[in-house]
Length: 136
Image (tube, rainbow, N blue to C red; front, side, top):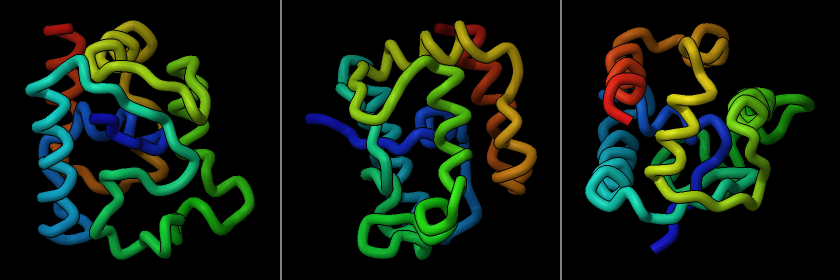
Protein backbone atom coordinates (compact mmCIF):
# COMPACT_ATOMS: atom_id res chain seq x y z
CA UNK A 1 0.00 0.00 0.00
CA UNK A 2 1.15 3.53 -0.79
CA UNK A 3 -0.35 6.68 0.72
CA UNK A 4 -0.29 9.86 -1.34
CA UNK A 5 0.18 13.13 0.59
CA UNK A 6 0.65 16.70 -0.57
CA UNK A 7 3.48 18.76 0.92
CA UNK A 8 1.89 20.39 3.95
CA UNK A 9 0.11 17.18 4.94
CA UNK A 10 3.54 15.61 5.45
CA UNK A 11 3.72 17.74 8.59
CA UNK A 12 0.04 18.17 9.43
CA UNK A 13 -1.08 14.55 9.43
CA UNK A 14 1.61 13.20 11.80
CA UNK A 15 1.20 16.02 14.33
CA UNK A 16 -2.52 16.83 14.15
CA UNK A 17 -4.60 15.32 16.94
CA UNK A 18 -8.06 16.54 15.93
CA UNK A 19 -9.63 18.72 13.31
CA UNK A 20 -12.86 20.67 13.30
CA UNK A 21 -12.61 22.34 9.89
CA UNK A 22 -14.10 20.74 6.74
CA UNK A 23 -16.47 18.50 8.68
CA UNK A 24 -16.50 15.08 10.31
CA UNK A 25 -16.29 13.06 7.07
CA UNK A 26 -13.01 14.77 6.17
CA UNK A 27 -11.56 14.13 9.63
CA UNK A 28 -12.69 10.48 9.61
CA UNK A 29 -10.78 10.01 6.36
CA UNK A 30 -7.67 11.71 7.77
CA UNK A 31 -7.88 9.53 10.88
CA UNK A 32 -8.16 6.41 8.72
CA UNK A 33 -4.86 7.18 6.97
CA UNK A 34 -3.20 8.27 10.18
CA UNK A 35 -4.15 4.95 11.81
CA UNK A 36 -2.71 3.06 8.85
CA UNK A 37 0.57 4.96 9.11
CA UNK A 38 0.81 4.68 12.89
CA UNK A 39 0.13 0.93 12.84
CA UNK A 40 2.54 0.35 9.95
CA UNK A 41 5.48 2.80 10.13
CA UNK A 42 7.00 1.15 7.07
CA UNK A 43 4.10 2.17 4.83
CA UNK A 44 5.34 4.19 1.86
CA UNK A 45 4.25 7.79 1.45
CA UNK A 46 4.44 9.38 -1.98
CA UNK A 47 4.68 13.17 -2.18
CA UNK A 48 2.11 14.48 -4.68
CA UNK A 49 1.65 17.89 -6.26
CA UNK A 50 -2.11 18.18 -5.79
CA UNK A 51 -4.75 16.50 -3.62
CA UNK A 52 -3.68 13.31 -1.91
CA UNK A 53 -5.53 10.53 -0.14
CA UNK A 54 -6.25 12.61 2.96
CA UNK A 55 -7.93 15.27 0.80
CA UNK A 56 -10.87 13.00 0.02
CA UNK A 57 -14.12 14.48 1.33
CA UNK A 58 -12.62 17.95 1.66
CA UNK A 59 -15.03 20.57 0.28
CA UNK A 60 -12.04 22.33 -1.31
CA UNK A 61 -11.13 19.29 -3.43
CA UNK A 62 -12.25 20.13 -6.94
CA UNK A 63 -11.57 17.12 -9.16
CA UNK A 64 -8.22 16.42 -7.53
CA UNK A 65 -7.02 20.01 -7.08
CA UNK A 66 -7.38 22.19 -4.02
CA UNK A 67 -9.50 25.30 -4.39
CA UNK A 68 -7.33 27.00 -1.74
CA UNK A 69 -3.84 26.11 -2.98
CA UNK A 70 -3.80 24.88 -6.57
CA UNK A 71 -5.56 27.59 -8.57
CA UNK A 72 -3.68 30.71 -7.57
CA UNK A 73 -0.12 31.78 -8.28
CA UNK A 74 2.15 30.76 -5.39
CA UNK A 75 -0.84 29.16 -3.68
CA UNK A 76 1.17 26.01 -3.06
CA UNK A 77 3.60 27.96 -0.86
CA UNK A 78 2.07 26.04 2.02
CA UNK A 79 3.36 22.79 0.48
CA UNK A 80 6.69 24.15 -0.72
CA UNK A 81 7.65 25.49 2.72
CA UNK A 82 7.28 22.03 4.27
CA UNK A 83 8.96 20.22 1.36
CA UNK A 84 11.91 22.61 1.44
CA UNK A 85 12.38 22.20 5.19
CA UNK A 86 12.19 18.38 4.92
CA UNK A 87 14.49 18.31 1.87
CA UNK A 88 11.85 16.57 -0.25
CA UNK A 89 10.25 17.19 -3.64
CA UNK A 90 7.18 16.10 -5.57
CA UNK A 91 7.47 12.42 -6.47
CA UNK A 92 9.72 11.47 -3.56
CA UNK A 93 8.78 8.41 -1.53
CA UNK A 94 9.61 7.59 2.07
CA UNK A 95 8.27 5.51 4.92
CA UNK A 96 6.16 6.99 7.66
CA UNK A 97 8.93 6.21 10.17
CA UNK A 98 11.40 8.14 7.99
CA UNK A 99 8.96 11.05 7.75
CA UNK A 100 8.62 11.29 11.51
CA UNK A 101 12.41 11.17 11.91
CA UNK A 102 12.76 13.99 9.37
CA UNK A 103 10.19 16.09 11.22
CA UNK A 104 12.11 15.58 14.45
CA UNK A 105 15.47 16.41 12.83
CA UNK A 106 14.45 19.34 10.62
CA UNK A 107 11.93 21.25 12.73
CA UNK A 108 12.98 22.94 15.95
CA UNK A 109 9.58 24.62 16.27
CA UNK A 110 6.21 24.48 14.56
CA UNK A 111 6.49 25.76 10.97
CA UNK A 112 5.29 29.23 10.07
CA UNK A 113 2.43 27.83 7.98
CA UNK A 114 0.70 26.86 11.20
CA UNK A 115 0.27 30.56 11.96
CA UNK A 116 -0.44 32.06 8.54
CA UNK A 117 -2.22 29.25 6.74
CA UNK A 118 -4.03 27.06 9.22
CA UNK A 119 -5.89 29.37 11.54
CA UNK A 120 -7.25 26.45 13.57
CA UNK A 121 -5.96 26.52 17.12
CA UNK A 122 -7.69 23.46 18.58
CA UNK A 123 -6.01 20.76 16.51
CA UNK A 124 -3.66 19.52 19.23
CA UNK A 125 -0.73 20.04 16.86
CA UNK A 126 1.57 21.46 19.53
CA UNK A 127 1.08 18.31 21.60
CA UNK A 128 1.49 16.06 18.55
CA UNK A 129 4.68 17.84 17.55
CA UNK A 130 6.07 17.52 21.08
CA UNK A 131 5.30 13.79 21.00
CA UNK A 132 7.27 13.33 17.76
CA UNK A 133 10.18 15.34 19.15
CA UNK A 134 10.15 13.21 22.30
CA UNK A 135 9.43 9.72 20.93
CA UNK A 136 11.05 9.43 17.51
